[in-house]
Image (cartoon, rainbow, N blue to C red):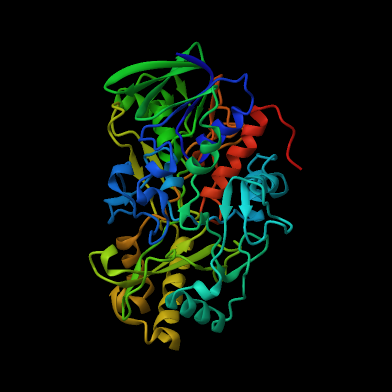
Length: 512
């Protein structure tokens, strides 16, 4: 079975590539997805279709890869949910549609990626969105497939109103549009959820392309490895319906995400040679950066008992606080999420859930294979909070959240006892560091494990177009390609990257 372009992974990036590339009726595209496919809106399970009452990480096990990671030396069994379904993690996530900030892309350019400056990526951010609030304004779009909106304050829950009030009184500025360059402070989250429906790439981009005769979608099809011949990728080997089959194409594009893509590369013999030999994989191409440089947005979870029963009618996350930590030169390097969790949604009962999160950690982890078997999960060693700078900013975030919740008048009628927090460790830096290491958690934004960069960078896996160094006919287009994370939830940026590289693959001029 052959085609022009074979895409592995029908997630945030893969569905966009499939939709854009099949606009050319002469290009035959095959899209492989390990999870199930729901081809119509009516066939979508409710937990996939609806985004009300869901927080990042709360997804049906039937649509989760079930990864576990090592957060720190004393937190070794951290769940790392990722979507296994057509739509990928865009079909199960919290739908927060924040963009990276200009400083993120200046850093990417400084690493040798001079086609990824903010002014070069902004047109693609605009191209993909239909912003219901700011679509006619500068820096936004209104014609894209992804619907975006913000909750007006009259629809905010009492917890969100109290949080915003506390942040204002603490001196944080108002931020009506968090996707505006140079914005900061407290304001509504941009959400890719319209009328309760999660705007995944499956129900937007892919839905528009499904009936094209030049697109074939194969679900429940797990890619095992890339097939190589004389330094060129010629196809993939995949398991489907109990059979192992080969699919061939002129070009292979890996869109399996920050975890799946480096795993597939290493199973194909592309990666750090010594590690591959140690686990019994024949080395095809020594590429030391595969699985290195693993980034995330590390966090901890704080919880207070609630004195009211919240509703599932609205999205849990409505009010966003971004700020720059004290003595930090990294703009907007912190973000705080807050949610009132209903009793039925968690075993501990109704509670206020607060996550102070490093929006740009300096620490990095590593991904390695557990074995040469594709069915064995990779080893995810995140190494959160190893860096003193990361620990200092997290301490500050915990103390800020505790002060705002426990000392602000608006929360007194909403919150009761502390259910999860550092307790007496709060006032001692060393003790608080120990609590952070024991309670570290994922921000659900694994990235940068196959980073883009010039061939002169020993750890760069692909060039600025996603073409894998040293292997012809093979690209990477997903979160793993980021040279570093962005100071935002990464889904909007992954979509932007797919739009940008799709335009290049299609031979189209840069969007202006």
